[in-house]
Every structure is written in C-alpha cells, then in structure tokens.
Image 1: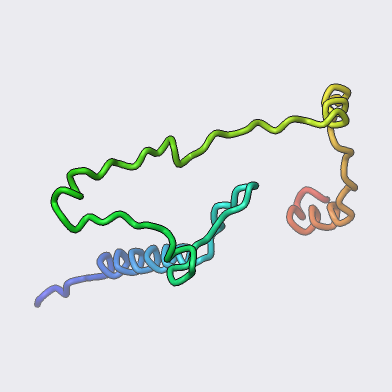
Image 2: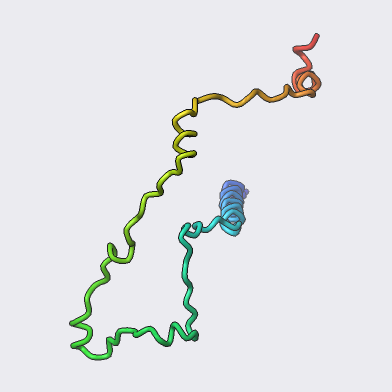
Length: 124
C-alpha cells in the first residue's frame, strides 16, 4: 500500500506567504504624508508658461558643450538660512517660562465595570 504524500506544511507556508504579501500591499497602498512646504513659499514654473520660455536652458548637443558643462553646486542652490529674531514679548515669555506638567485627566467612569468584565475571578 502506498503512503499518501502530505502537503499540509507546504499549504501552510504558501498561505502565510500570501497573507504577508497581502498585508504588505494594504499598508503600502495607504496614503502617506508629504514633506511640508518651506515657510518662505515656493515657486512653480509650468512647462508652457512665459517664465519657462524666458529661461535659457543649457544645450548639451555637442561634445564641447558637454565638456564645458560644470557640475551643480549644491551649496549655491540651498541659500543661506537667516535666523529668526524673537520679538521682545517672545523673549520675555521664554525667560519667565517655568517647566510644568499638564493637569491630570478625569478618571475612567467605566473602569470598575470593565475590570469586573475582564477579570471576574478577582471580584469574589
């Protein structure tokens, strides 16, 4: 008599792999938060706008133009940060501020009922 091959281990592994892939797909499809815009504002130039037509784009058609091209200087594009100066009222507020905790919240009204429900053996 032949013994039957048992594939339950393989089925379990396949089911686990499929569930992990499904969960990863669900979490990957959720929306995420984008980077916030800087406080100074941003400028967007559309491709067909007048500003875009006025901008001179470099040409890299010939070998000489490609050899003469300079790499982008990242430091020049960042700009220099200007520290924000505090107003006198803000300075006074910071100097007089003392660390403290917030007030305690109200107790849970349903705590005893929930405890009796979750732990009935402790309430004899």
